[in-house]
Amino acid sequence: MGSTPGPSGVDDTTARLLVTPLVGIAVPNLAGIIDHGAHSAAGLLVSYVWFIAVAALTWEGNLRLYLRFQDRTAWLTQPWHRVRLLVGLILLFTVPFTGLALWGWAVLTGDPSATWRSIAMAVITIAAAVTFITHVYETLFLVREWGSDRQRGERLQRLNLEAEIVALRSEVNPHTLFNNLNALSHLVDQRHPRASAFVAALAGSYRYLLRSGSKRLVPLADELELLDQFLSLVTIRYADGLTVVVHVDAHAARRWLMPPVVLPELLENAVKHNEFTADNPLEIDVRLEGDRLTVSHDKRPRRAMVSSTGVGLDNLAQRFRLTTGVAARWGENGGRFVVTLPLVANSGSNIAQ
Image (cartoon, rainbow, N blue to C red; front, side, top):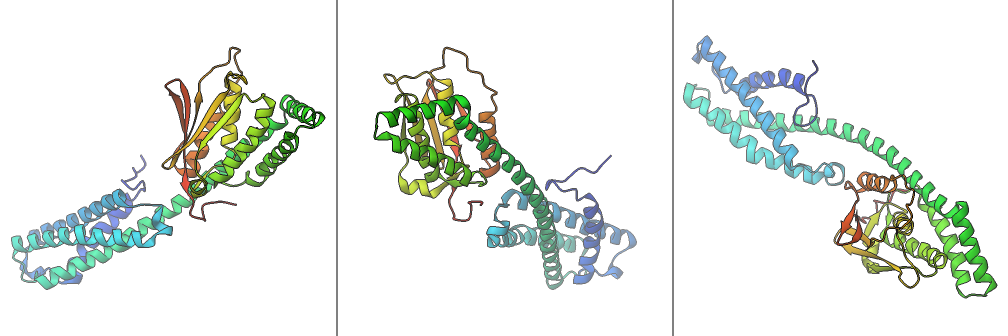
């Protein structure tokens, strides 16, 4: 049978079996806390079992507390957070626990070498060992996280490529392309003032797709601009049967990031699955609520069944989980279909090229 990983998720059984007895034996001798001549053979055995137990409990206690309070995202971006956590654990747990445990042993055994000075030296030595072992764990965590990040990055790249292909396909498939070109032809024939806007929106949407497809995150402002371009196409195509109301101010739109080509996907999804007309348009509401963006509309299922693979929203959820750490959610609320999208604060370095 294989070893079972500990609370850290790392199989440290062998290291504990080797290092804990070594620390439990070495520290009392290095600190001069024990006088071998003052103990019988049985007394020495019990004393060293006590020291080893203290070492094991100190190791386990520090590790569990560190894992509970650490922020792994801060290892590289906020190193002082890690230092403060380590110092806090040593001062609030390691020093009091080991000091009391060694003082209790000194009181029980009456060892003449167990002075306050030697006990303090032993505690300092243990604190140094805790610091070293903690950094070993951190190195193991970082190596594992780097591997996980690489796998997540590769998977995200595939999902973004798939989303880009789906978005492009929705604009260039024969039926949609015919409708767009037919609408453009009609606008040109009528010398309609919206003709140039239609061409600009069509070109802009393609340009955005080509520019942003390889990025992990883009500004919310860019996505809202793309949504406006797609809406221009869809509005003409469906004779003003759609309206979009955006409750996001320009400043807030620049402060948040999200995966690319998301809002057009939701727009196309609403068009595909719902009934609407120019007299009874489908209103799509886009609203910023804290660090979440909600996209909602009335649920009006089409009378004719629409074929769907059902992977679009699942793909969307996975892309958000990989880029923000939180999956997108969707569901029905009061007769409205609501999609909730978690956002990432724009620090200037979060946009992957």
